[in-house]
Each structure stands twice: as C-alpha cells, then as structure tokens.
Length: 228
Image (cartoon, rainbow, N blue to C red; front, side, top):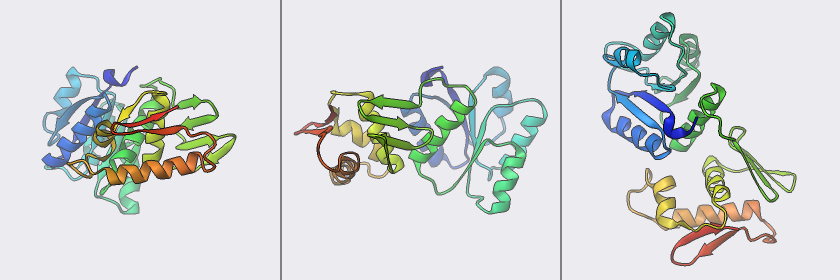
C-alpha cells in the first residue's frame, strides 16, 4: 500500500498541535482525520478503516488509554501510537497494557514521530515499500536508522538520515532549497533561514564522505543541492 492510501486518525485536544500533526502527516502523503475528543471517533471507525491511530492520553471526558482499551475489548485492532505528556515509567507501562504499539512522550520531534509512524505501519504490514535504499556504495535502512558506506556503518541523526534518504531517492535531481526548508525546517522557522540547512548538509557531507573522494552532494548555486 502506498502512503497516499494510508489513513491516520489523530485524537489530540490541543487544536494548534492537532493542526501541526495533520500538516506533517499530510506532507508525507498520508490521509488524516483529526479529532479534538473521542466523542465521535467510534462512529467514524464504524464507517472507515484507518491504518493507524495517534492518541493523546490527556483527553476531555475519557482518558486516551482507557478509550483505546475499550476499542480493543470490542474487537478493534488498529495500531495505536500514544503521543502524550504522561512520561513516568508507570505511565508508559500502562500505555502498553492498554494496547498501544508505540509510546512517544511530549515534547517530541516531528522527524522522530514520522519515523515511528512508518515503522509501526511497516510492522503491521500496511505499507510494503522498501525501507532499505541502496545507491552505489551506500545502504540506508530507515527502520534500523542505519547507514552503511563501503561496508562501514555511519552514525547519522534522524534529520541527517532523512536528508540522505531524500537525496538517494532522487539521484541527479536538484532539490531546491525552498523544498528542503518546507520539508525539514518549516516547523522550526516559518521564514527560510538557510544557515541551519547549510550547516546540516555540510555536516552530512563530512560524515558520508570524510575524504572528499566521492563528492556525492553537490551545491547547485542559487538553487539547492543534488546527489550524484
């Protein structure tokens, strides 16, 4: 199944955060249905078959964990990620007892959330696209969060890994700086500030090609970057 065929339900009572979550997931190509409470979710589930639910536990009227547990009791087995400020060890244990598939505490990183969403969807068999990308001497494994170059494992941050994945999926194509900003930095800075981008890509270059023998990532002056 392709990402644009995957529907994700979000239950989050903070409207601004709900809108941000919808934005980031839709940008990845997912269909999204957002709810500020659990009031109409069960009715929605009777009519739709979403592939994943992202649920806050601090919800009005019904605690999110107990709501998920009630869905499990009546037979719903939709994968669930709890996204919540409840961060004690006992809270996390309770979350898995209630039936979640992953547990993310607030504050959180959107890139990490997207990686975890993809991992849960892959584990549940919803998406079947390869998580492993190979290009020349590079092997990138999104699920394992690992990159191997010339049989040597390279440590990258989640942001660096997703940047590299984008380049590997688009060899010889110029990726515009505006596109990179919108994809990776817009949630941090509404208006483009390319200093952070330049620093991150420079660091990525040094990690994947410390001796500069490959010159994989090239600057396209005035436009962006491309991978060759």
